Length: 287
Ligand code: DHB
Image (cartoon, rainbow, N blue to C red; front, side, top):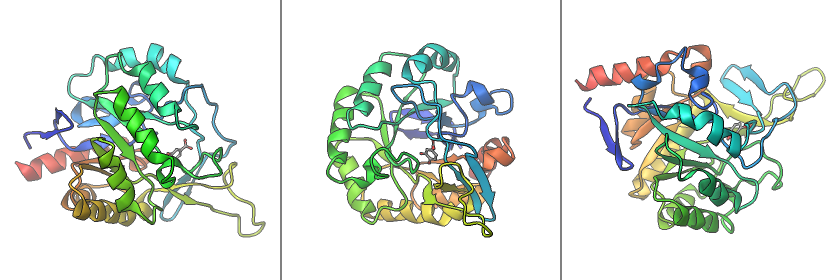
C-alpha cells in the first residue's frame, strides 16, 4: 500500500487510533508503535480541565464495552503546554486533535487556542459525546438548529482539515452530514458511541457511576458500517469509519463501505498491538 492521499496529506496506511483510547499519544507510546500507523486522534480537549464522571466509568458486556468517562482531560492550556511538544517529533503518524465543547462557541475558542501550535494535522470535532448531560443530553450533532453555526464558525477559524464526529443514533444522518459538507468541513467521522445502560438485574442499579454511557466494541460495528455506507451513497464527502474494528476484515468492511480511513479504539484495550497488525495485514493484501 503506497499510502492514502487525503485531507491534504498522505497517510501511510488507513489505520488510526480512535479518540479517547490513546491519550495524547505519549501515554501509549511504550506499547504502541504509533509511527507504524496512519495516525491517531487525541483524547477530547475541553477549554477547562475536567476530572470526569463518577466511578465506575467503564464496564464490559458480551457485545463490547460501556463507558462514561465524562471527557476527563487536563484542559486546553495544559494540553498545549504539556502534550503538544511531544507530538512534534512524530514523522509518519498524522495527529487529529479531538475537541469537545459544552456551549456552541467553545469549539471555535479551542481552535483559536491551538491553531498556531505545531504537532498536529487537524481537528476532529466531538459533537456527539453521549455522556455530557449539560445540554439535556442533546449533543450538538443531533441539534439541527445549533449545529450549522458551530460548524461554520469553526471553519472560519482554521485552514487545517476539520472532521465532524457524528452520532450513531441520528434519525437524519444524511441531512446532518450534508450540513457538515455545506459548512465546508473536510469530512465526517462515523460513528461515536451509542447511548446505553447496563443495570444489575437483582437491584435495578446502573453499573456505571453516571448511570448511562456509550456502547463501543463489536456491537457497534454493523451500526458504523451502515452509517458509512448510508452517507457515502448519498454524499460525496470523505468519511472516517469507526466502531468495533478488531481485525483486518472488519477494517475492510468500512473501507468497502466507502471510508477513507478507519479508526480502532475499544479493541486496543484488550491488545494494544491490534492496530499495528491490522495496518500490516491491509498493506500485505494491497501489495
Ligand atoms: C466519552 C466521550 C465520548 O465521545 C464517547 O464516545 C464516550 C465517552 C466520555 O468522555 O465520557
